[in-house]
Amino acid sequence: MQDDPNITLAIDKTIMTIVRGDMLIDGTENDEDLGPLEIGFTDGSFLQIELIGDGESVTYAWRDHRPPVLSAESCEWERIDLHTAPPFNELVGQRVTTVDILLFGISGEASRVIAGVGIYTDQNRSIVYYNGGDFAKIFLDDDPPPLPKGFNLAWKSGRCISPIKKSLTIRGWTTGVSTSNS
Image 1 (tube, helix red, strand yellow):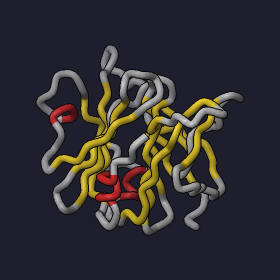
Image 2 (cartoon, one colour):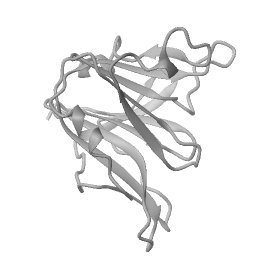
Image 3 (cartoon, one colour):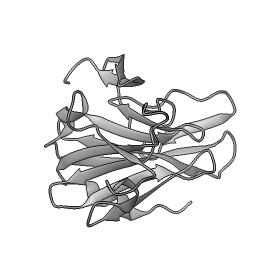
Image 4 (cartoon, one colour):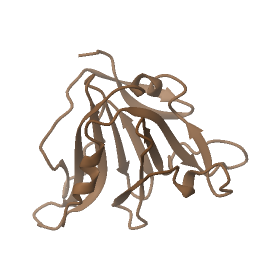
């Protein structure tokens, strides 16, 4: 597996917007697959993260304008602005200090794929985008849950998130949210 150093371009950028795409079913948000994620920064750049259809990988790309897959004109995706309401609005204005890659593989095998991306801020907050088996998952201040025996999910840097966590339902879907600001 080859790392794309490109993801580290997020370091020292300030978060301005957090948006996800959703294919609404009968006007209702999908709570299983949270769609692509777009993070906009105050310098005008956008980081777009989305699933690859293999059931285990994600891909990401930088744009100097709003990515077309999440543009308002797109009839495929409905833009869901996460940054306008708690708890995601708390990340707006925070500076990115670290970016990490979540690796997935079968235990005992050297082959790994990029299964997620974690973005960490100067206020000890994080947002993680993860391919949970063909379903996009977003975790706030939390890691994805452990996998069954025989599979391995690990941060490339070994970084761990360890604040006290609780489950929080946001617009019908559940995420981990820190109960402390430490």
